[in-house]
Length: 540
Ligand code: ADP
Ligand code: MG
Ligand code: MG
Image (cartoon, rainbow, N blue to C red; front, side, top):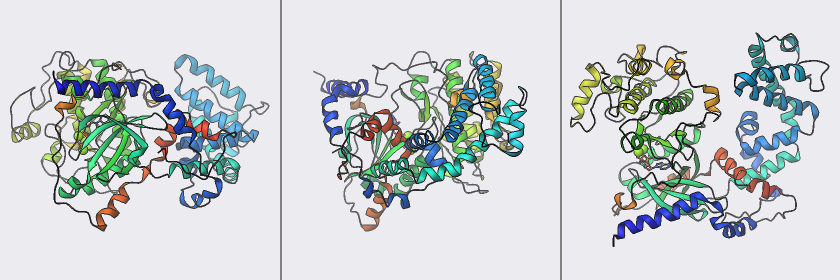
């Protein structure tokens, strides 16, 4: 009997079961949920001082804040109109060509005509005048102004009044709940999914919500021994800043006795390297390559917009979720660049590193576009541009080719637009590379992406071309993932303990609030028939 194979089967079965149905443990979860309650309002007074009360964060980005702000605006007709107007503008922006015209006409008649019930009367001055006289031709331009004016209006009196309303008190209770301490008892743990430099990554499930996540566990002793602690904190802080549908989300950071843990979006569909080399013929179909690259491009642009360079773009670091959407992961090499500064630290993976890194010159975001060029090439050809599949060459030769050789496009799947985008990303001179030729050089405008409507892609409205099989575990067998050796002779001092505390900040607002809403806990705990208790149950 193959014990390793049996272990793997048992681990997979438990994991697939948890993924498939949250009601697998319905009774257990109900019991836990019933014991939960929001902290009482008097426990939340200090919350107001602690949190940053900023319109964009509270009313637009945080899902629970947004809900309460909306509920508040429903109590004043003028505020309600402003919010509905923004919703309609959003629907119109995301609509496809046919529905778009109807939505535009609806907006014009219900919001922009002074005699209509929903007239946006808070608008004044030049913008109000422009709205009154809007035509089909300048609609887009005028609506961009109207949208800004509407947000400004909501940020004023309505936002002030919201903060002294009962809705805001309730929001403070949720913010206090969000700050509850998180320990490993908060989760069930399932099979190991992969291995990183400082520990394993496993699937976990939040006991009270059923939400599945991936947990990257970093061994504290190993971190200390190999001086990895600063890197770990940097990775955590960067993940926390990021808010893009195309980058894995950090939901919790906590510590156990032996590990620092990063709890992130669970990506069940495998990485792109696996899809290029381990499924069917080498390479990925053109429509998939275009779709994934479009999402990756949005992810990279998001990082660059907050002055972060990713530095580890390669198919292995792009993971697929259940639906077949992809996200960038492993931000361990990402760095924040101070305004106007450059870096010259050598970092990246051989075969994807740009000439400016190899030459040890100063660089910023240009290196990500070069690495993306290598990755597109690899998705199409099933090999990287400077190293053939399974070719045995040393790093110096790869470096020489990358610096000196013209890229060849011998694979039959390269058509003209694909060759062109690869060539433009793989330009050796930074100033001539796609994405680096001035402030408005947007790779999304390249004709290779002509089938992609980016604003719909960002809103999650474009169906993925491939959906991973829900009954397949796209990860190595557990027996094939090597164990870690025990680290001896490392003790922690006060400085270390302080550092661990800095890392273990608990729930991250936006993903945690999403989890509360999606799991139904938000509605359950807001139910007025439920008693409030002083206990801040941590789901243990
Ligand atoms: P390291 O930075 O130490 O290399 P990674 O972040 O790359 O660690 O994670 C190690 C491995 O764990 C990955 O190669 C992948 O197999 C798996 N993994 C990482 N993050 C996730 C995730 N969010 N969902 C599923 N598997 C993941
Ligand atoms: Mg990695
Ligand atoms: Mg890493």
